[in-house]
Image 1 (cartoon, rainbow, N blue to C red):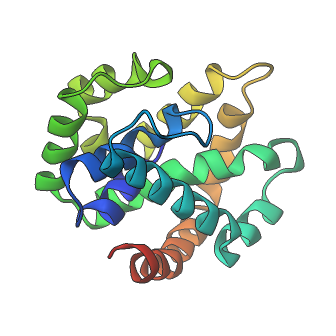
Image 2: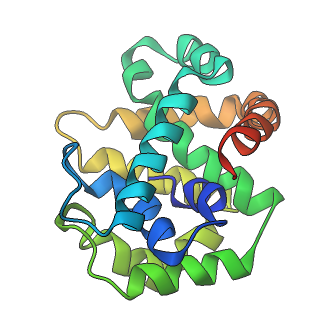
Length: 182
């Protein structure tokens, strides 16, 4: 759930557009007619960003180098790692406050119903600046998936690869901003 990266790429839009970007992972299916137009546009924007990141050469290379047993989960972990680098290297308290205001003003989709209040109360978007906190968040997501916690198993690799992840972010983020930041 890389809220911060999606918020940064959607900050130019209205609060409804931002909301769509923030809740998109909790919205199932392609039928978005039940959502206001700007929220639906934000959901579609989020999905376009996800597709572009998943195909980015930096992500493809990182996925290929990850331990085989956890490889299929690397994308989830990297999403939070990108939020870590944003929070650590480009902190923007005003954007974080706006995200919390927008998320707090509308009930989150069921899939995010418990997560959003905890995120706001715990100030997760700012706390992602701490890599240890980010790794605990990654492991927490893994604890909600079926089977062994492959995301928790991946965190030692993330620690070992930190300089490489940082370099990948330095190449990936300008590409994403140029393509999606409006």
